[in-house]
Length: 223
Image (cartoon, rainbow, N blue to C red; front, side, top):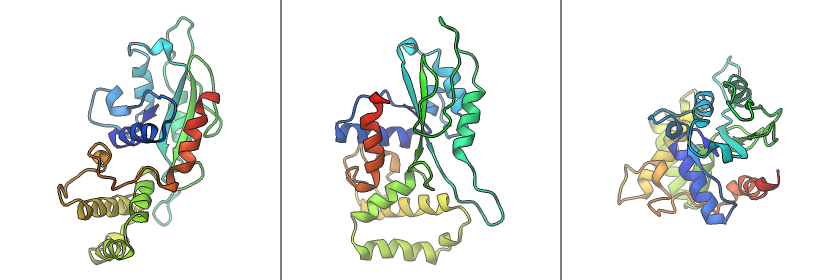
């Protein structure tokens, strides 16, 4: 599984473990690239680098997990993240075999394309649903908090004007960080990346918001 960044990698690693899902080799773009910069604009570079990693010849399937992020400022067109991912897959270099091959891009999310290895793309939160991993994490965190606490975070967002930010993604990230900071007195600077490795349960991975992804990953070996 190839994710955008470390937060995504930690999320999927712990989600798989908690639900007893089939084993995946989870890695992020920045890990594959041996750098600090990830994101959904570097899948092509990561795929090209992946073929040089030890053990690549044994890889049968690659699952790319990318954020959907539909909303856009007024007057702008929503960014089609799936189209971007497909374009990156199509622009990867040929894989030196044997056998010589090339990564194939699927026609739609959750569909398999090509072989040796095949490629599947999962859009987060879910194909056709706007948002990203932070959207899901914020929902799970709020579902397990009292309504007064949630209202306080919303009020703070309004008070500082963050609720007027053009980017829905930025608004969500701000609320998630505020929610986590105010919930975890031991380390208010805690990063969303480490909420699971530090056993905080601030973002419960058993929340129903993750059910569709859990079901898909459970059936992935049969795809």
